[in-house]
Image 1: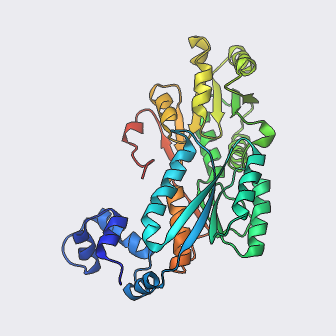
Image 2: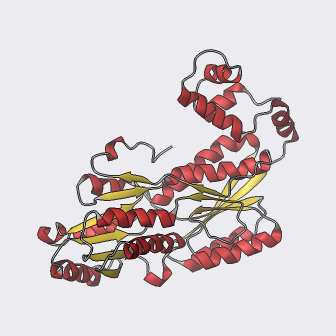
Image 3: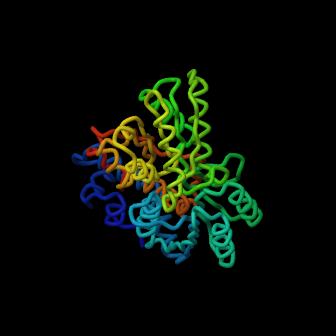
Length: 354
């Protein structure tokens, strides 16, 4: 039993005729479609006899997914959509997944999810690395068991993860600072808003982004003041007063940034201020989720940096599968593109979904 041309075509999203022409190097095939087919062939290490032996063996693999819970339209919904799409494509290889979800604002929820995961047997695990210290502790336990794991969302250096798929968080912070300085003066006020997070509890990704952001400011003679504001959208009176005070007292344009995907919550909060104050702040956010895109198109956000969350989930699960199916060792670090979106180009940005 060999893997069929129709299977390769389905994985590549092209016709069977296109696959046939690529395999036999005949006829005309567009470069885009040829690249898609060749990518699939490389991923499965296409050797008909080897694939046939695997399918005949009936061996199965099960992977755990440690990821945050989410609501419709959230960043993590896109990540999990990518994982689910890969899982659907891999069913024919007897691969299955099981989610262990946790509250991204509660580190003890992460502990409970990992405890539930450890009660079962898995061949590998994908880990969302929001709670760095706890992820490192779990990683060491997995190392002792010889269980491979892949990080998603943000990498953690010095660990023995099989691979990392996600954005370059430090680079993203650097780019954000450069863009924001194009909107404000070097002696301006900058608000770093932490939505639903206490500053001391922000995620690995957010901490790394902030390091990149601050280093760029330090290296480019920024002399203004940085304000860290913790915002609870369900109890916003105190933070709204802080925002209003900073903006009102500033003699020039104020910069504002949120280090995760929730810039839309800051937009909503600023909408409660006078229009004259709203016009004095320039915002930059992360991730092209629908609510952020609306703020960009309405002119409330100047820039959005997007790291294609669905693609990182998709690629991470495919890499884990290929490691077991075809003994392919993935590249250690796999950065997603950092896409810079503005009001004028966001309508043409179609790559934030697979």
